[in-house]
Image 1: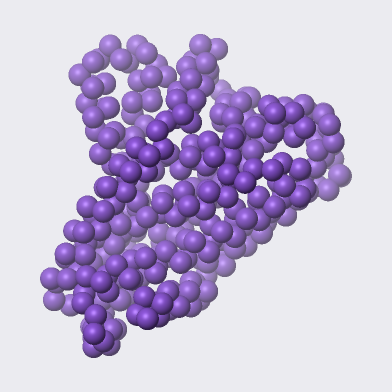
Image 2: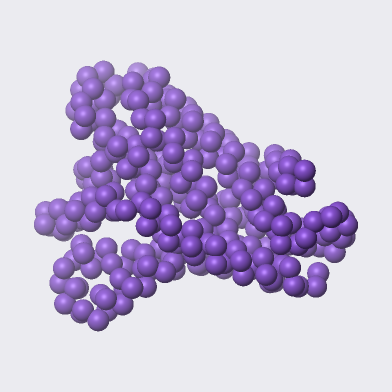
Length: 309
């Protein structure tokens, strides 16, 4: 009952936040923009037929065109809207949950009920994710329906992006919660979580830079250190590749043919690196990231249980 009460409370808090409705508005705007795009063989129409051009690259009737079209949605719309803008706004929106929860008056009321602090912490941790589940479900269901009903592209695996988005957020939210319970500062939680996200991305992508530019691999010690370090942090950069893999999309280079690299060989290496990312062991990616999250959550829970609020 306590868990359900916290979920209901988190739902009400979500609906009261301006950021929630900003994301809803952006989702509806993207959905409307996608509705204005149509395909008729090699012809692409925009703005509900007001403008058209010929391009067979995104022809949904061919396997390649379908993969490029889904890839365009995944790499540009989903990764930008939900993967960067969305998650950043979600971190900002949820950073104050635990600082507000640990205020003396608020926490005393909850602790008056028969529940220990460790369980209370976990209930609050998971209940706060209601915000993310609602946003992710709205975005991916609406864009899936446009691809299916408007474009004739059936990609049910795309809906698993909801799960991948929640996972991506959770990898970062655990850092936010740890900072929040230690400092009781929403601002510190936001800044340090965003900083951690940048560091995770840099560490995770470092080996790919060596793979794309082989001359860098001559520095074997640095290359070996980069690979070892990339195993430790959560794989936040895998969100887009997990979504693309399950959606049966191609690479971003295929979806965006004007990708600017100096030489054709660099372009091919970059494509090979992306193909390796798409074929990566997903259990390793998710499992190692969850292991990191579990360690951080346990540390935050231990702090929450022992600290005198």
